[in-house]
Length: 364
Image 1 (cartoon, rainbow, N blue to C red):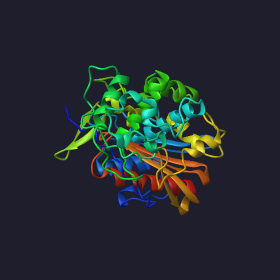
Image 2 (image 1 turned 135 degrees about the horizontal axis):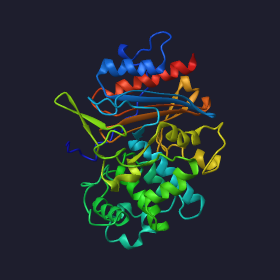
Image 3 (image 1 turned 90 degrees about the vertical axis):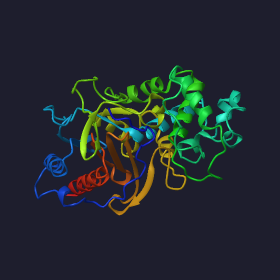
Image 4 (image 1 turned 180 degrees about the vertical axis):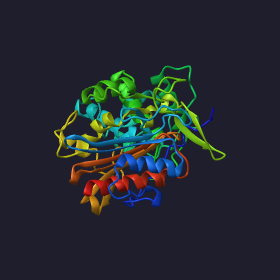
C-alpha cells in the first residue's frame, strides 16, 4: 500500500486554455464520451467522468474507462468520485447556514468560540475570524504537522487537539496575506462543531446533503474495501499505476474528504447559478460566498474569463489518488466538471484539456 502524505492536496487553479494537447482534441462530430475514451487510451490512465450543468440540471454526463486498472469493471455515470478540496466550498456553505441562523457570524473569532484555548494557541490567532479562515487569510499553517495524530480521541476532540498543536507557534504570515490552509478549514469546521455540539460530518449531512438531495454524498474513499463496486484511486510509482482505496485522515474532513456522484455534486454546484432558484441559503447569502478577498472567496478561486462573459468560480481537488475540477460561469448559468480516478504529473494538463473541450462543445 502507498504511504501518502495527507498534506499533498493540489492547490493550483488552472488557467483555462480551452484545449489540451493533441491527444485531448475532440475529433469532428465525436461525442464527449468518445473524447474521454480516446484521452484515456492516449494517456494510459484508468478512467474519467465529465459533466455540463445548467439551471435545468445536468445537461451532459459522460464517463469512460475502468474503476480499477486491469480489472473489467467500468466506470459509470453513477459512480462516486472523491472531491478533495472541492469540499471547501461545501464547508463554507455549511458555515453560512450557521451564520444565517445566528450561531456564528463571519466576524466570530477563534477565541470567541474557544476562550478556553487562550493559553494553548498563539496570540497571533486569537482574533482570527471565521471569514479569514475560509478565505485563507488567517495565517494558519497550510497543514497539520501530523494529520493522523490523536487517534484515541473522538473526532470533534481530535480536531481541537490538532488545532492546539497547529496554532501554538507564531504565524508565518503578516497582516491579511493569502496562505492556502487546510488546517484553517479544519479550524473553521471545529468552530461549527463547538457551537452546535455536532460533528462536521453530521452537520454536512443535515444542512447540505439532505436538503439538496445529495443521497450519494459521503466521506473518505468511495466503495467497499476490497471490492470494485466503486472506482479506486490510483497513484503512480516508478511509472506504474497502483490502485488503492485510501484517503486523507478523517480529521482533515472540512478541507477535503467528501465523495459523491457527479449528478449529486452538480446539485451543490448549481447553488452558484444565478438563474437557479436558491436552496439552503438565499441569493444574497450565496453571493457573499463568492465575494473574493484578493482572488479567493469562501472555497472558490475567482477569475475572469472572456468565454464566460466575466467572472468564473473555479476549484480543484485531489487526495493524490483522485482529481476533480469545476468551472462555474455564472453569466452563462453553466458549470463544467471533470474528474479522474488517478493522479500523476500529467493529470492537470489532461483534465484542463477536457474542460476546454466541454466549453467548446457547449458553444457549438
